[in-house]
Amino acid sequence: MNFKKTNGISWNLRKFLRYGSTQWILGRYACLGSEVMNRIAPKPSILNFQKARIDLQLDLLSNRTLSPITEAISQYIIRPDIRPLADQQASFPFQQIIPPKYFIMDSFSELTDQLFVHREDAWKICFNWSDLNHNTQFENTFECHGLLSTQHFRETYEAYFDRIQMIFPGISIVYLFFSTALDTRDKFIKRDNALQQTLESMASKYPNVHLVVLPERLVTPPITGSDEYRNFPYHYSANTYDAYAEKTRTILTEKNLL
Image (cartoon, rainbow, N blue to C red; front, side, top):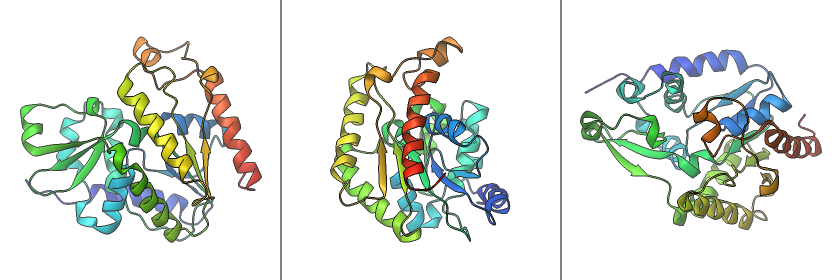
C-alpha cells in the first residue's frame, strides 16, 4: 500500500506561516505540559509534537524516509480528536528561521507511548496502545516495538539532548515529570523512577535542562469531568497543575524567558 507523504507538510506549513516570523516555543508534551502552558502563557505561539518520542525524533532527524504516513494509520486511530497527533509526527523534522525561546517537554511519551513500525515500508510512528484498534488488518500492517527500554534511557536522552543543543545552541529545556502518585501499576511506577534517576544523573552534563518534579503530597486527582477522565492516573486536579505551573514559572523567570 503506497501513500504520498504530504499530509504532515501541510500541517507544518500552517505552523510555519504562523510562527516563522515571531517568537515561539517548541513543545513535546501531552496534557501536563498543556495545562502548565495554559497557566503560564494562555495564548503562546507553540509548535508541539506531542507523541514524538525521543528515539523516534532521532530516527527522523537521521532518515526522513522513516516519517509516518498518516493516511495509512488514521483508520486505526480510535478517537478522531487524536488523529492530528499523527500529522504532528509526520511533520517532524521541521524548518524554522527563528529559534524558539525555549523548549518545554513532559515525560508522557517515554513513559507510556509505544513505537509501531510499518511492516512493508519500515516507517515509524508512536501512539499509546489504547489509541489504536489492534484488529487483524492492523497487526498484519504494523509491528509493535513497544515502550522505549529503560536500559536505553540514558544513551537515548544523551543523544537527544546533544542533537537539540546542536540544532538550537544554548536553548533552555524545561522537562516536566508526570507524577505516578495516582498510578497503582508497578510497571509505570518503575519507569517513572528510572526516568527521574536517569535525568537527574545527567544534570551536570546538561545544565540547560531544568527538571520539574512535584512531591506526591501535592498530587491529587481531578474532581470534575467524566468518570474516565477522573479515573485516569495522569489527569490531576487544578491545584496540582497550579503547583507544576508555579515551578515552571520560577525556572522561566530565572532564565528571563517570560
